Amino acid sequence: MKSLLMKNPVVVGVSWIGAYLLIILLPLLILLLYPPTPNEQRSFWLEFSVALGFIGLAMMAMQFALTARINRVEASYGIDLILQFHRYTSIVAFLFILVHPLILFIDNPQTLQLLNFIQAPWRARMAVIATLALIAIIITSIWRKQLNIPYEPWRTAHGILAVIAVGFGLGHALGVGNYLGLFWKGVLWTGIALAALWLLVYVRLIKPWFMLKKPYLVEAVIPQRGNVWNLVLRPRGHEGIRFQPGQFAWLTLEISPFRMREHPFSIASSAENLERLEFGIKAVGDFTNTIKDVKPGTKAYLDGPYGVFTTDLYENTAGFVFIAGGIGITPMISMLVTLAERQDERPLLLIYASKTWEDVTYREELEALKDKLDLTIVHVLRKPPEEWSKEVGYVDKELLERYIPKRPATRNYFICAVPKMMDQVEVALHDLGVPVTNIHMEHYNLV
Image (cartoon, rainbow, N blue to C red):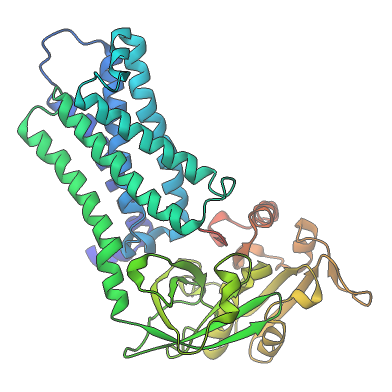
């Protein structure tokens, strides 16, 4: 029975949520079970403020776990959902930590003196430094693109600021002493901080070391329609990574993985062929614009695979419906070629939205797959050629109703496109009777 429970994704997912809640609520449990013995009467608002501060600090420490790409956790939710959760919980933690001193200032205006950085005690200085670091994290994360901050410098600064925020926040809590005066309480919080530090070391040092032991070589860079390039890799000295079709990996090219200059890309090749790995990469930015110039023989390193956007998790379904927009076809071409190699006989429908006919990435490859699969392809063009007599415009409810099965709940639906298109398609599918559990989505931009 135990092994069956561990294999149940719902049970595993709920278990991880329970563990997360337990850790962030642990400070409140400690305060309830072992309250401090104050020298003076403390108000409700003071105690409430402290509780918010402890929860916010615990949530900040947990961010190191959320971004460590722990395989067992990622396999339960998918890294896309985990990173979204990381963003939202960071904002909540920031609000808790910000409200913590505001309540103190309102409840006891004399504490405003602690903002005098020169004369304030070191524990108050630590709180100010931690709060400023957290503010910098939030501003540079939410408005990174508007501030024109390149991803790689931002990521380095993000990690440094996170260490400062948690480290100085813990120093402030220990320095106050009223609530962590007992030795074992200090040891507990120090253990939480050391666990966060260990996760940082794992991500920055240990994982890159493992990647360094399993290099790849670039075999070719193949141009595709739609300004897309297929980067072809072969493993060097090892058998390659085993992945499920539709998954992705973080790619490092030319430089050491310790440099932490990596980028996530979907795998575009068959999961049945580990000796040849292909990534579909659209030239849309500083790094992706250089892919076409990568020379054969260039070293590459991979961290992965990641993702739950895969047909392999739904073997018992009667068939699949794929809805792609632009480069969103990449994970789906991997699923389709894998199903073809496995001689899958289930009915498949691909609805593929593109700007023009010449922008249809993998156009010829998709047509060839119709000879190997029970595959129907519906192209939707925003700017069709003059002789075009098929679907035009956008993928909306009316178009979907024309093509999806009459019993829509018998299929699983995979959507990968720009956020606006995915949101609209998701709403339309719900209106057409598709259960939420049958809809699976993957975002382009994780960072």
